[in-house]
Figure 1 (cartoon, rainbow, N blue to C red):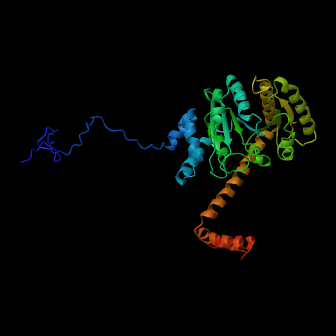
Figure 2 (spheres, rainbow, N blue to C red):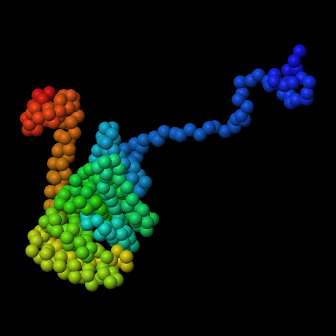
Length: 369
């Protein structure tokens, strides 16, 4: 009989290795710890009331969660966001809203960090809503403004929120207005909206801020040539950045040139004269003067009633844009439109009908159903 300890391939005439039969068991041989294995717990959604209370207390982390809720497109999040904003609304409207735009390379992020740091040192709480352009191909955004503003992001009196433009014209996110309200309810005195800087469609930004600033640099005249009527007529101040070192005389020359241009344009704010200024985001020169200009603007417009009238007009514009957005959504989500749209699109592509006739047919079905 063969030794059960010898492998079946062994030669019985020679010494060879042997083995000890194992003990039958369901155990896999791996020592198991008595500790419980880690399981990722599902994030419990914070109640609207809790979120509201946390935002009103100035909790920056909860403010970020509130903005995420506002920007969400999920249907149940939309209703929660509106409920939250309804409770926050009585605590809004006490800030000064500043819009900042400019040509690429004007140093918007560097300017905001230096300007925001100055305001924080003076005891103000500053919220920066930085809008990054979204790719038309992938839809993604870099959202790197926090990286650019390292000093400001560490300040306890500052809050920086980068958001994608998501294809919205005007260089802002479509929920920027609601985000402004959340920041105001959290106790921020100054709201800065940094746009992507896209030219004439910046009129959308003008419709959500009190003071609109155009940031430019020396030698940017050609870049601004096509923007002048669309941007400079909207600006309450034109600021020539990077006025330092050997560039300072050129910056002063550019400031004078802008003031000559602004002299012939109608100011966007009644009772206020738009002027050009210089500053340096590197050494901080001119920052205090710019803040003095903004505080003077607020004082003059509040005394004349222009400040509150502009806020009222902006509320009407906001409502109109919301109606347009809702109509757009309900049209494309309509079951009948979803069914017929591909058919009419193909008919237009094939030349079987005109675009106007196709649109008329779609709207006829939309209203009939």
